Amino acid sequence: MNGKPELIAIDHDNYHAQHIGTTKDGLQFFLTTPFEPGIAEYIALFKFDALGNLVDSDIEPLGPRSSFSVDEAKAKYSSKLESLGNISLERIEVKPFSVELNGTKFGLIAIEPEDEDDIWSVELLPGNYMAFFEPWDSGVYDT
Image 1 (tube, rainbow, N blue to C red):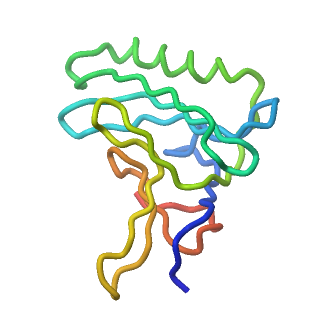
Image 2 (tube, rainbow, N blue to C red):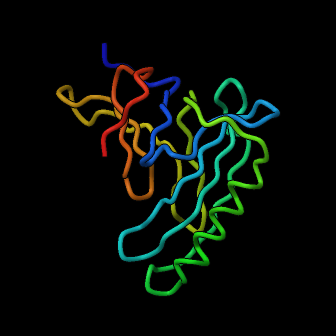
Image 3 (cartoon, rainbow, N blue to C red):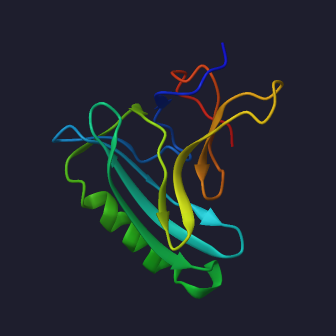
């Protein structure tokens, strides 16, 4: 049963999937805060069409946690959320994707099994703070 994921469902929650849903014009979105431990933190806004294809990524580097104001970071995050206009916070279904910024991969990246005992997974990178496994339409993730 373990096969490569075509679509990943993510249910809205009050944790890592707090700001996912759809925009008034029908785009799906995911606003999140990826990080490279000890190196840098980011604010990332990903937008997808109705079929789950990535159509836009807006990734803003904040730098190491010690180098930026938490209040400024919250304001930037809120600004990206407000830029979406009228939204509905709800389940999204998107295709695995990867984009690169300054040599760092971002996205919901499908991880191929390394041997016959392994299974497919999808990890939110960088930071790997959300991991998805079959069934891909469950909407749930591991942290």
